[in-house]
Length: 174
Figure: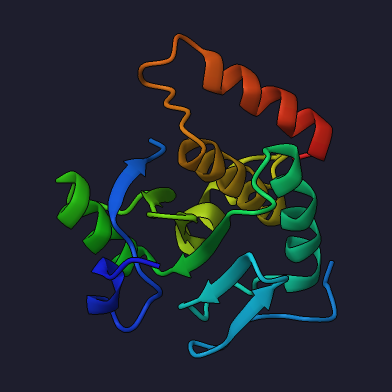
């Protein structure tokens, strides 16, 4: 992992931001200090307490999604933050002094990178939708972030990323 995020209350590590976007499992990750490894290549870090993150289903989703993207040998983390922490990242690395739903930070070497998700923004987006659950929105944001970490860029690729995202949403029901 890289080192930028350490200045933000001990989060894992981030480098260059590359992405943005204008029922219960038995296991939950609600603790500010809890870090759960997902196999050896995935890590969920929950730095917020307001919205429970359902680890069991999320872990299974990540374990099936990574191979579909050819990422089974590349490590990455998914970090859940408050709107306030996400606003600071968005301000410091993108110049926008407001929260956003997802940011991706490219790693180096064999480490793919970090995906930051504002659980507050994701929750509010799902509440505004009659068809989008919080869990499904989290999955969509992770997928979006992983596509950015894999080199896709919806701002410059003439629809290639959006088409891939649609195909993977259908395949993984998110």
